[in-house]
Image 1 (cartoon, rainbow, N blue to C red):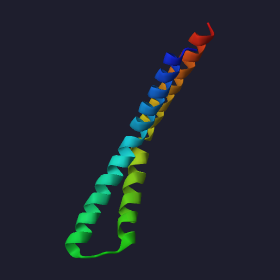
Image 2 (image 1 turned 120 degrees about the horizontal axis):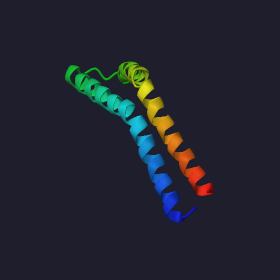
Image 3 (image 1 turned 90 degrees about the horizontal axis):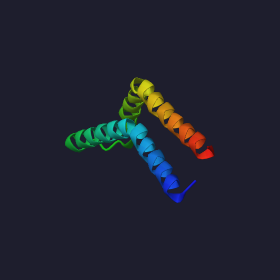
Image 4 (image 1 turned 90 degrees about the vertical axis):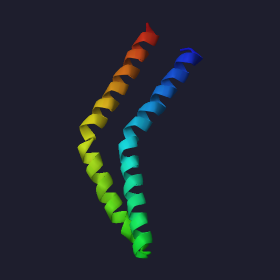
Length: 89
C-alpha cells in the first residue's frame, strides 16, 4: 500500500466522521445559542437550563438520522473493504 493510498484512506475516514457527526453538532450549537440568547434576555443565569433542551434535541436528531448514519457508515466500510481486496490483488 502506497503512502498516497494511506493518505486517501485517512482523508476519507475524517470526512466520513465529520459527515456523520455534523447533524448532532449543528443542532447542539443552534439550540445552545438560542437558549443562551433567551437566558441573556430574561436574565436567568441557570447553568443547567441549557443542557436539558440540548440533550433532548440531540437525542431526537440521532434517532431521526440513524438510518442515514448507518448508510454512510456501511458505505464507508464497503469502500474500505473493496480497497483492501484491491490492495491484496
